[in-house]
Image 1 (cartoon, helix red, strand yellow):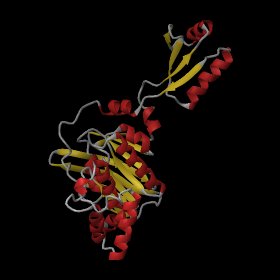
Image 2 (image 1 turned 30 degrees about the vertical axis):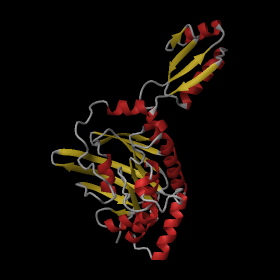
Image 3 (image 1 turned 45 degrees about the vertical axis):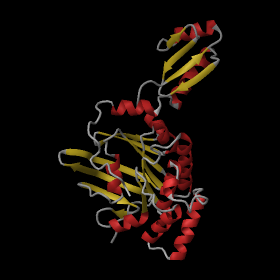
Image 4 (image 1 turned 90 degrees about the horizontal axis):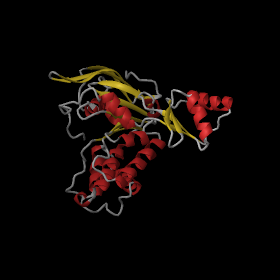
Length: 325
């Protein structure tokens, strides 16, 4: 009998471990990915992101861990997991020697779809990804963005409810990257769960409901983008004044603030939380001092990433860094 996870979680991992020889890639990590969300796994090159994807998609056997995907135990029911997921790796699985439509029909055959159903699914997905006009052309003539769209369309042939995307926008131009973001948002709106690895921090910030930062085989931090941004110093509230007297009064009272006498502004350390912002506003009201402008500045994900992964830079690539099909 298949052991299931709570239906609100699409993926769970407890104590996930993997080593290649004396190189420990994943050192007992825990993950919990809610259904119908985007979960982003960040980390430097060699941090183990691709290994995690390969294990959770049944392509690599873990050394240890209690792992469930789509409600199925990964170790005892790998076939059930495979039937529920789709995987798009770093490198395209598209066959350049055949047309886009033929690539789609090949995937339909691999999923054992009846001929009529396979053609229908291929036609619908090609239209969905704006590839109908190019369907009869060799995939070798496609742009990078078109190949990536075809790659994901092929992944969707089996109607997976969980999709692993391993650095899906690497090498794409900004326009193609934004197109891919739109595709991912549409998938999630349809209830699909997306497990995303990326080196583009803006991408994680834009798409992910939850973000985990992987470093030296362990999770350095996990949370929403806003929660992670509060972990590192540098956040502040900036008060700007046009009245020099109001500025001097505020500067005298708020001694922890950094003064900018030329700009008539004060920079007050803050984590950007509602509580701290309310305290500053209450203080301004109580003292009768009026700031002309108040802005909240929080660290971005770049700051978070560098703060959490700056202790050392891995010198070796992830040993499982190969094409994921």
